[in-house]
Image 1: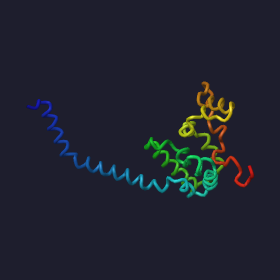
Image 2: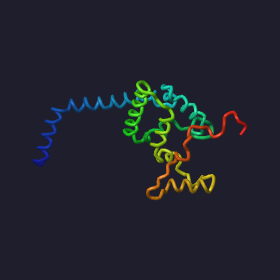
Image 3: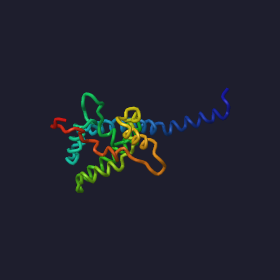
Image 4: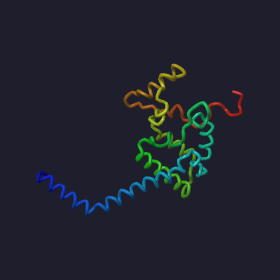
Length: 184
């Protein structure tokens, strides 16, 4: 025997399902299609090489490619999104940031003068330490000198009001540390 309140609840649920079931099903399939479509469209624009579709990024791409963050056989390579966008694990924040930055850059490329140095400084100014610490989380264990350990400790555990940023010391992240054609 079903209690009266449960019977009433089941009757309302059946009525609701008959009335809105088609809308829910349609909405479900539209959401799945949108998710798959968004990821399919985003894939070709998610490689570092795709950043060079705008000629302003050629220099950044070339210098990244030759840097320690670019592809090489001894160090794990990173791509543009790891440093310049929220983590991919935070999918909706990542998608929103990727869309915003992409549209902004295309707009500036088409309709405005794009000052590469001004944009570089703007990007460095907005770069949070968390982007660097995503990969470089063991800074205190692998410091090359006492001075580096102190600087990293001050960055990881800043005094109130003083929040040093990784990019204050490491502003030339794309540049190769040794000259390509030098004997060093």
